[in-house]
Amino acid sequence: MVVEARTEQVDPGEPETIPLLEDESASKPEESDADDREIKELRRKRERLALANQILVEEQKARVAALKAERERVVLENAMAREILTREMAEAKGKLDRLNLQVEQVTKQMSLEGALRKQAMELELADLRAEEERLKLANSVAAQTIETKLIDYPLKEAEFKIEKAGLENELARLQAELIKREKTEILKDQVVTEQIYEMDPFQDGQLVVSDRRIALNGPIYQDTADYVAERIAFFNNQNAGVPIFIVIDTSPGGSAMSGFKILRSMQGSQAPVSVVVKSYAASMAAAIATLAERSFAYPNAIILHHQATSFVWGNLTQQREALEEARQWWERLAEPIATKMGITLDEFIDQMYAQNSDGNWSEFADEAVHLQWIDHIVTHVRETSYVKNPDRFGSPAVVTVRLEEQIDENGKPFVWLPRLVPFDHYYLYNPDSYYRLR
Image (cartoon, rainbow, N blue to C red):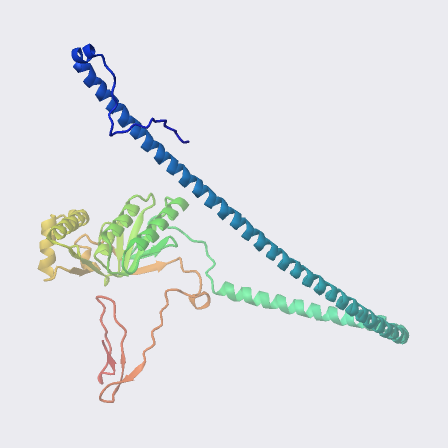
């Protein structure tokens, strides 16, 4: 919007004069000065308005020029778009014409192929009709032959049925005989007897171990504790009044935490739990045997007690903390053993090192009885749970070791003997050092 300022042209070189009366000019000089100032102020305002109007006019011209340029650009773009659309439509029409031509060619080709297929089918149909006639003739001949043979079939079929019945009877007899023989062999390889549970299984030095037995061998760790605890719980749910046996062949001990879990399961069992040591029980395994409600061992079985062993890493503070934790575990484990022996814990430790410089106090079971480590010595353990022939049904406890002969640096033949379990010794005649230990 243009603001038009109307101004009157005034010559700045000739100051506007206002006629005054002589008496007024003389009497009012102050009013004349005020009027001059007001006139100057009005002139400045008029000049500012004229300048603002000129700026607005120039801005309006610039906007009009920009709008004209934009309109010309849009007109040009529209013309270009129309040209592009026209060209694309021409190309599309050309493609459509080519497609129509291709469709026409394909249609003609399909018509030709259809005619050829029809001609081939007519030829094939003629051949099939000829083959049909030939087959009808052949079938007629075959039918006559079959009718001739059918006269003999009933007699042959009857003969075959008689022969088949005889064979089936013989086969049934043989199968029955095989089943009987197999059942007889299986019966021979099993002990057919009812399991008898003795409330007092220890009589005259003989211990009868029933099928309520739990094997505890090798190192004691979490899986071992779970294995033993689960079976104690099962046997209690089965019959809470019949003894349970934990049988230790060889065990070097293991985790104190896992061993305590086994002890708690034994102590919480309603059924009495006895521990049987056949070869040796050391460390945690010895603690389980000693703290059992009732324990048995062969005279030559070895029981070993020692202080708790710990492996400590870390800085000094961490090592002190770990040592204190190990000391508490040791007291929880060893105090009940010392109490059963009738001595203090310190006396128990002193006797360990008095017996052996490294603190590993081991005794044969017949001596361990005097120390209250084992309750009873058994001369024979009768295992009533083994009712199947291990040679027929397999035994997971059987391990076969093959000794392979080798030649040493001097050309002499020898074999390495397998490693023995702790406390075991080889006792053999070996004058030429043929058998050697690693």
